[in-house]
Structures are given as structure tokens and as C-alpha cells.
Amino acid sequence: MRLRLTPREDSFYGMFADSANNLVTAARLLVELISEGADREAVAEKMRACEHAGDECTHAIMRRLNETFITPFDREDIYNLASMLDDVMDEMEEAADLVVLYKIETFPKDIIKMVDVLERAAELTAEAMPRLRSMKELNEYWIEINRLENQGDQVYRKLLAHLFSGEYDALTVMKLKEVIDRLEEAADAFEHVANTVETIAVKES
Image (tube, rainbow, N blue to C red; front, side, top):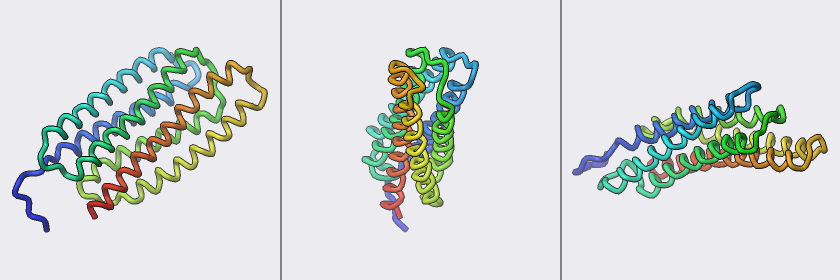
């Protein structure tokens, strides 16, 4: 058992949980965004609010990091985890923004599978953050996130094949591909979060 002469700042756990819970909200907004009959401008506005909330979480973590002498785990890992969570939010918000800017009204049906991957990854990430305190039962989290990211890659390739099948005109292909690319980047960013959590857990074991 390690003896600590100086109290360790544990508020990071709650801030990471807040950031991850915000990603769950954002992923569910994506589900709403691509639903038939959705008020896409209203949903995109809610997504922008989520992105601002995510920025606030990230800035709060960075401020606390600069003010804290004893951290619960490596300072670099705290910085990386906060940044990776922020990257996920940025990719999802950009996807929503592009849908509105490009006035996209219909989507390939398989896009829901990509958004489902993001929603599940967000839920798993939110469930994992509180477990950083004990560093227990985290391996299933990063294994499942890796599986989801591979599933997302498969869906992404199928979506691209559909886009280039000749069903869509060139301009629509360009618009839809930009949105789908952002969704795929968000799936990748969730895997980066999981990889960072794995790094932290290995160091602390």
C-alpha cells in the first residue's frame, strides 16, 4: 500500500464522467438527426450546445490539472484522455452541422448502423469512466470498443460502396461522404479514448 503525505485530487473522475455523459447525449441527438421528419436545424442547435458543454468540461479538466500537485494518475494521461473525449464530441458536432449546412434530407439506410455504433460506444465510455477510480473491470470496455470500431469500419465501407453505386448524383455523393467520414472519425476517436484508458490501467496495475 502506497503512503501519500499529500492529498490526491480526485475530482478528475467526476469531470471525466461528465464529459462522457455529454457524449451519450450527443450520440442520441445524432439518432434523432437522421430520423425521418426530424427538425434538423433544432437538433443541430442542441448538438452545438453539447459541443460547448464538452468544451467547458475539457477546459475545467485542464484548469484543474494546472492547479493540482498530486494527480490520480499521470498528468499526460489526464491531458490525453480529456483531449480524446473532446475529439469525439467535435467529430459528432461537425457531422450534425454538415447535415444542416448541406441541407441533406435523406440518408442511405445503413447510416443508422453507423450511428448505432456511436451511441453504443458513448454508453460504454460513460459506464467506464467511474471505474477509473478503482481501475477494475475496464478490460471488457476497451475490447468491446475495439469490436465496435471494427464493426463501424465495415459499415463505413458498405456505405461508401452504396454512395458510389451510381444511385446518387456526384454532388450528393460529396455531401453524404463528408458526413459519413465524420461519423467514421468519431468511431475512431472512441477507440482512441479506449486505448488511452487501457494505457492508464496498465500503468496503474
